[in-house]
Length: 101
Length: 101
Image 1 (cartoon, rainbow over the protein chains, first blue to last red):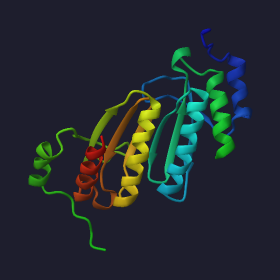
Image 2: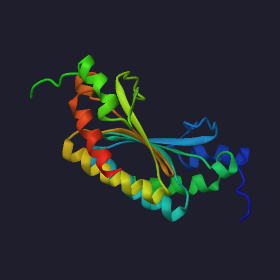
Image 3: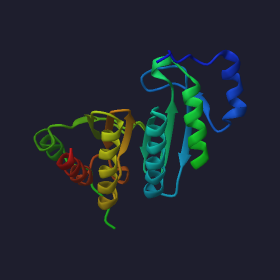
């Protein structure tokens, strides 16, 4: 499999328009090139239903988030370990998550 | 509903024997009186299957974890917001989680 390339600076700059609900962040593991979106739901049941849908997307994309849930809140952080930072795989999964959010 | 009481010092000391797989921790929100257990699975599919079972337990107990997942790893932190620290509700949920782990 070809190495996954990190986003270029111009691709990274385009994310502001492409994924307006996401912001640049770092992962808990300290990866300083990631994007994050926070979601708030009515309750835990709604939050976990959303997480189940994201889990299916993640498996489908073979790309998995770092995410945290506390009751009705879900925070999703995306980065590509194999690329050492943001890649097109993060954009694709973020777009898919935005579709169901 | 009666106020949920924090564990006493002797109850807290008993946790070492009662919940040997758990360790004292703090929540991301900074609550410095919590317990944590980390789980490692074969892959994301197994990790999320476990999370689905924990989600059902959480709803059944009406007590919800702060938890983080990255691929095959799940970290669960328990504390009782209404008690301002550890309560019997954390012990009960931790025991239920241990049963399915």
